[in-house]
Image (cartoon, rainbow, N blue to C red):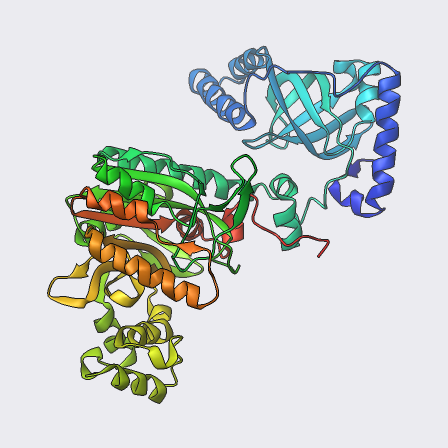
Length: 523
C-alpha cells in the first residue's frame, strides 16, 4: 500500500518535537561520519525547467524521425536515457512505495519528480535516503524518462544529502496564509508559495527596463550619499543616526534630488539614480519607511518634456515586462498605452468638485468655500487660496484618478523646488501622475534662481521650526551651487515599489518588498 508523506504531517505535532527528531537524525549521521553540512559544492548540469524543455525537445525529435515505428521510438528514447543529468533542490513531497520512492524536489526554476529505487542506488544508500526528511536539500544524479502517468522525471542512480533541514516546513498543500508570517519569514513564503518568487523576478526585470530606457536616452546612472550632514526643511521626517568618529548626528536621506541637481550644475546634462530612500513616517498598503525611488534630471527641458518621458517609459516597461500596455490591476483594466489625460489642478478640482479656483478673489473667499464644503485645511486661518485648492484636490479628485492621469500646475505653497509659471506666479511648473487613485510620481521644471530658492528654503525651515523642530536647516551649499548656474532643467522622481505593485497586480507594498519593515514581536 502506497504511503504518502507530505508537509501537512508537520502540523500534527509541535515543531519543537520535530526539530528534536531531526537533530537526533543529524547527530546519528555525524556519528557515522556522514555530516550533511560538510560538502562545499555540488555539480549541477541542468535546472529543473531546463531539463523539462530538453526532454520534450529530444522526445519530439525522436518521434519525428521514427514516425510510427515503435521500435525506433524505443531505441531513440533509450538513447536519451544514456545521458546523465545532475540536479539539486529541496524535497517538497514524498511518496513511499516499498523499495521505490517518488519525491518532488524544487530548485529556483521549477519542481521535478525523482524516482528513487533501492536496486539502482544500493541498499545502504537507500536505507540512509529513507531517513531523510521533507525540506532537506539534496543532489540527484540519474537520467530522464517519462512515467506511465506521462510525467517527465529523473530516474536516480545516486542521491546526495547536501543540507539537513532541522525545522519542518509549513503545510504544503495550502501554503502560508498568515500574512504577518509571510512578511517576517519571507524565506518560508518563497519555499511554500513559489508563485511569490515570480513577483520578485518581475521586479528585477522592471528595474532592468528602467535602466535600459534611461541609458538609451543618454542618461548616466550615479550614486549619491545616503548619510547627510543636515536635516533639510522638507516636509518628510528623516531617520537620525550618529557618526562616532566625527561626533555628529547624521540623517538618512529623504530624497536624492539636491545632490543630483548639483551634478547638473557640474555638467552632467542627463543623470539619474536608483536609490534607497528613508522616511520616518506612517506605514500602510502603499507606504514603507524605506523604499526605492528613481530620480532623473535632464538639462534644457522642462516639465512638459518629463511628461512625455514618463508616459513613454511606462508604456515601454509594461510591454516589455507584461507583454501588453493594457494591464489588469485589482480587477480594473488600466490602459497605460492610451494617451494619459492631462489636467491642471485647477481644472481637475473644477471637474470633480465643481469648485472654480478663479471664483475666489481673496484667501478669505477660499477659506469660506472650504468651510461650506466641509473641507478641513491644515493651515487653518493662515490658509491661502493655494492651500485650499490643494485640500479640495485631496478630498475630491485623487480618488477619482483611476486611469493614468497627469495633474499639473501646482500652487507654489507646496512646491518649494519647482519653477514658477511665468504668466501666473501663484503656480509652479510641477506635475504628479496618478494611477488607480494613487500618486505614482512627481516632476518639476526645476527652480534654478538661487535667490528665489534661498527665500523658499528659509520659509520652509521657518515653518518647520515653528512646529518645534529646531534641527532642520537651509542647505546653503545647494544655494551656492545654483549661484554658479544651473541650466533650465526638467526633473522627475517616482517610487519603484508602486510601479512594481501596478505591474504585478499586488495590493500591498509589502508584497513587492522582500523584507518589509515590521513591528518587533517584542512590542
